[in-house]
Amino acid sequence: MDYLVLQVESHRVLAAGFGVAGTSLSFSGAAEFEITEEQPLSAAAGRIAAGISGGPRIVLCLSPALFALREVELPLDNLRKVREVLPGQMQGEIALPVEEVVFDALPLESGHYLALWARKADIGRAIDTFREAGCEPQVITSAPFAWNFLPECPADAVVSDGTALAVVSEDRVTFARALAAEPRHGISATLAALDLSDAPLPPRLILFGEQTAGLAASGNFLLPTQRLEMPDALAPLFKTDQAFQQLAGLLAVARACQAGVLPDFRRQELAWTAGDAALRKKLIVTAALAAVAIILLFVSQGLQYRAATTDLASLNKSIAAIYREIFPNRPKAVDEVAEVKAEIKKLAGGPEAGNSVLDVLKKLAEAKGATINGLYEAELEAGNLRIKGDARSAQAVNDFKAALAPLLATAELGEVKSRPDGSVTFTLAGTLKEGGK
Image: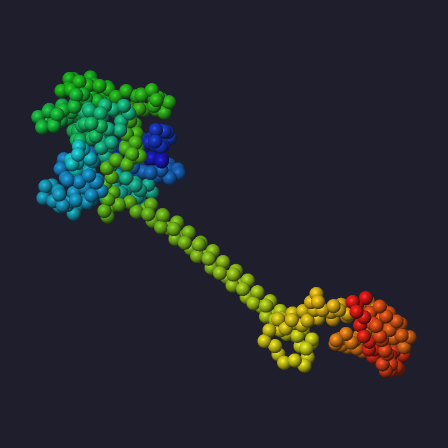
């Protein structure tokens, strides 16, 4: 997942791009956008939007001064349910009406949570500014809530970058606050207040950020002080310690977001819906394409069915015409095809039938030759054959009779009638030989 982490400060917006996937980490670059009277936050947001490529998840980090927190004890172990009951739990315990507040929570030890809240108006104003600029954030948070994800940060420590301070206990953020303009005094005062509280103070103070050198040299603090060093594994990404100190907090935010534990104040009516709208649009387009494909499929099947129906009707019409030609004197049959098949089977006969009608007709066709113009009637019954036809001459009829000698045991010519053109009509009767040879 690619993240574009934006940190809004009083005089600038710091932007850094990271790619986080499990233990894999990539860094695509960083930029600083100054906020002045001539270039307000909206103008800086517009410049950021103009430089975005791809589709990174935009995480906007606002000043911790906009957020308040309190530890609460709830008999729940589901963070989603904790978020649902927090407004009722905090009703009357905070100075603001819960209707004007958006809540989130961080898990602490069993049954204990760090309740976080901010004004909806403040969060909504930031959303509107960046949305109108063209880079609406999907997540709104504050960087100190992710400082337990700083590279090689101790599991128990007070962490500060000079603008804010957070307490990390058992690798969880248990406290965070913004510091005053004078960071050294703010750190000292906060440490003294924490020391007087019931919670035990962590054993060390970790400093990072651009003010590290000045804070370390400003004097003694209540805790032993260490500087957050750049791990060797990150040296190829950040190149210099100065870049690491400047961007370590943004890297922690990206890591916490990837882990799914970063507090997000885009909830309820402030929830990010652009992604849902884009998904709905894609689903609508997909559904429309699927509907078009189904319609085309039905149209295609309908056309095929219509063509098949037309072909079948034409075939039935042709079969009916053939049936009338074969059996002109028969009434219209219920199933012409079945009757034609039955007649063909009758003509073909069975194995025990001896000479079938088709066999006899075939032999007659072979015997007639070219001098017999046609045989227009043939009747075979109980081995007796009667034929009517026409020939070119009387001699052709005699030749035809002689050619039938292998087929007929007896053959007698009937009346032979002459025509004006010299052709003749004739009748012939005979008895088939046994075996039809």
